[in-house]
Amino acid sequence: MAEEAAPRLSIILGQENRNSLPPFPFIVVTPLMSERLATNERRYHADGTETILQETRISFQVDFYGEGVLRRMTRFSTLFRDEIGCQWFVRDGCDIHPLYAEDRRQLPFVSDSQQWVDRWTISASLQLDQKIKINTGSATTVGDVGIVCVDRSA
Image 1 (cartoon, rainbow, N blue to C red):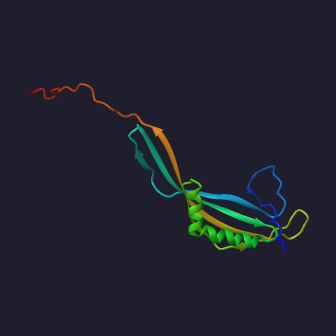
Image 2 (cartoon, helix red, strand yellow):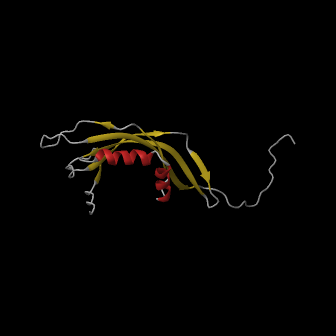
Image 3 (cartoon, helix red, strand yellow):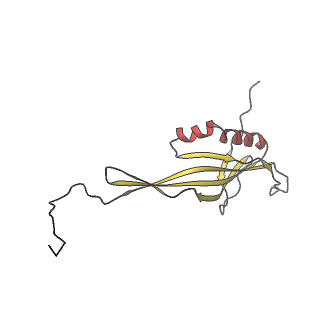
């Protein structure tokens, strides 16, 4: 017996104006908070540049809507809390590190046709190391140096 193809799953950003909801099932990701974790770190480079690093915790809510979303949410929470989630971001070249995901919650949702829809939500946090590279003024050579007497009594 052939397996049915999984329905296309849209993932959209929450709190966007003038956008209708996609067909079920879908996921909505809503940023909740951005919190600085430490004082800036500076790294100086031989080429006259400097990298300023800001470690930030980003918290977001992920809402899963439609039939079968509990299974999808279970996969998300399991993999996000696992080494696989960490490796996925590294492999993708991102300086992002999953921190934790809270327990799953079922919340009511009524569609525009006044029907109850399966909705599960989870809050998760990750660490994003934001880097800014700037040029810095620095001397690469020293010109003629002379000695100047500043003691006038001598």
